[in-house]
Image (cartoon, rainbow, N blue to C red; front, side, top):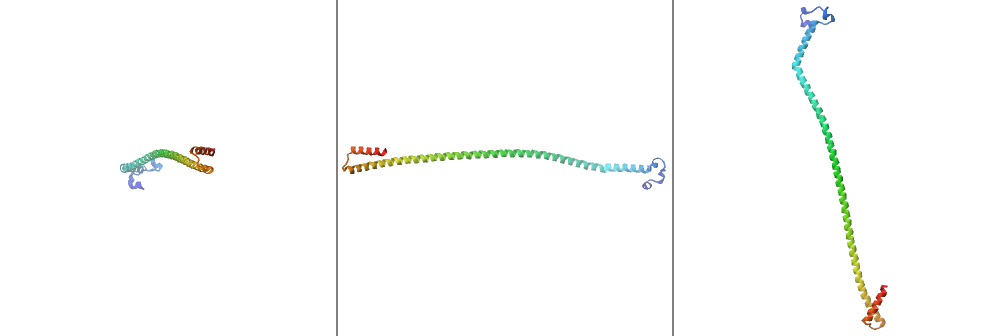
Length: 180
């Protein structure tokens, strides 16, 4: 049909021999080969180049994307390792700071306790000294009053004034008895 339109009738062969015996029209085959060759040349000249260029660009873009993805994974792994290292370092520094603060606070508490003990010891010593001083003063005062009372009592019992020597002897004996 198509071959009848393209090739005139006098080119038609007898289909009983050669390729025609197989059911193939030789002239149609030649026309189809020429058409295919022309179509191939036109496509090669105008279509295959741009198509191949687009395919090559796509391949390059995909390869660049894959390389970039691999590089990003590698960079991410490095960054994660750096972050972990920094976190470990920060934890270690924080632990050091906490330990230093704990030790400093313990030292401050010890110093405060020592100061409080020293102050308490000073207050206690001062109180003991004051008590000793007050006791000594009170004893002297009592001794003076006791001497006066003994002298008055002796005078009242004896009825006369006792001389200073005898008075001193009586007082000493009375004090001796009181201490014992």
